Image (cartoon, rainbow, N blue to C red; front, side, top):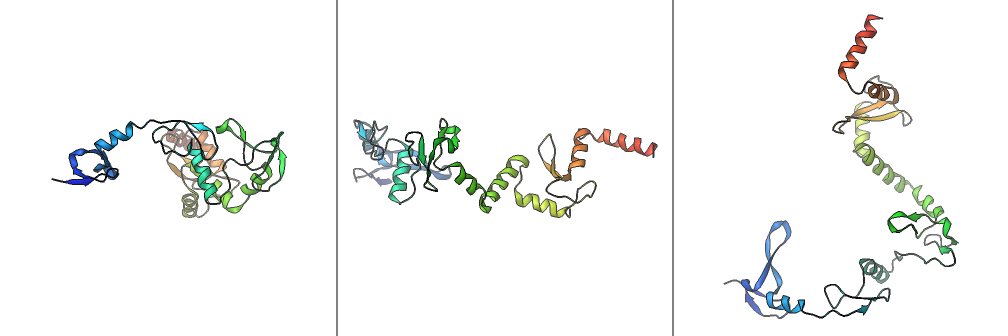
Length: 225
């Protein structure tokens, strides 16, 4: 009979005395604690205790040994332990706040707000945020995100597509520049088809990608050539 040692009581018990749970890659495995110890642990009376980070009193949800009231306080304590800058930044005092990047005390109006946190001011001022956004690595990251969001391809994929077309429009062979290129895609399935100049891209849009209309236009031009 297969036995396993309980992590809590240290007694070797049959496999049937342990709960089964799903592990990585869908494999079934036994719990680290036996059924009896699991039940005993669930009977622990949870009492309110102060958070070791912010000092507020909270009621632990599962374990009586929980030290922090939230995931944010847990992260703050970890950053403090490793000597990193706090996540929360400096508090707002009399309508002013200290920027965590430049260290200057500025009016709170000079800090960008976060919509995901009830429009609370960020930890850095607008000037520092603008300066950080102008760095080459930040610009490259923003460009990659913009291409992924707008075209569904990365910058490397776009540059490879442009190289395959020798830097020219796939329809009129006009030299492409950042001011006139457009990534053409199928409006039904979103598939990227190529890189076009602004005039050819607008032309396809006016014809609504209808092949029949384009053929009729070609025949019309030939009749009146």
